[in-house]
Amino acid sequence: MGVALVVAMVLWSLGGGSVAAQSAPGVSIQVTPGDEPGRLAAALEILLVLTVLSLAPSILVLMTSFTRIVVVLSFVRNALATNQTPPTQLLIGLALFLTFFVMAPTWQAVYVDGIQPYLAGEVSFQEAVERGKGPLRDFMYRFTREEDLALLLEASGAPEPSDRESLPFYVLVPAFALSELKSAFQMGFVLFLPFLVIDMVVASTLMSMGMFMLPPVMISLPFKLLLFVLVDGWGLIVRSLIASYT
Image: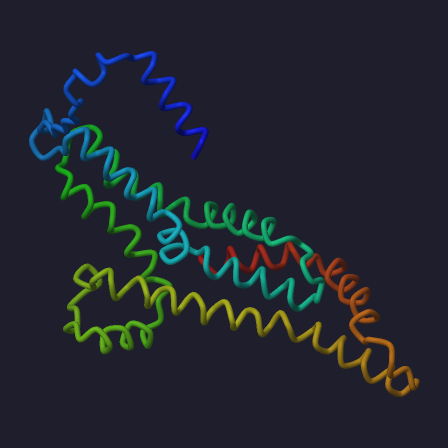
């Protein structure tokens, strides 16, 4: 507080009384219409870009393959029982780049069908949005289970859509996220099985030897890592994740 008062006094002494005599500055915001019909003004385009950037994490998590990939990678770490190895930041980074790899054809189609014609002035903003939603809608619909769609449609009270184009996004997005979680948990179950067998064998061996005070995790961890390395575990997981979207 004292520093703020000192700064204020210095500024007042430098500006003198002329500052008080001046009128308070005003802020004027003017949105001019676009140069082309159907095109947003530059200020609205900037506002739209900032809005999309603020929603980017939610879009990345719920409308792409990121959910399945990051959950499966987390299951791998838990199955190995390596605590925080690999670190969470590393798993998220790997999941992000795998998501970019899987979603590249879809995002390329969104750019070619919607963004590029709009930037060239060939279509209006509304038409660009409808065109851009198409590839993303097709991707989510392709990997959404019918029972999840039925569940969300029943919960929302929306009428049964005649085709996928008439399916509302507020129904498709949560249904797709739910389907991705189910697929990730199914893959996690398969990943846990071989490591669970190793844990059971090590635990029964230690009990038969009377070594009750020795934690089985300490003995089973090297065998888990050995098995994971011998079968090229990371390569198998990445290959399986990519193949699940083809």
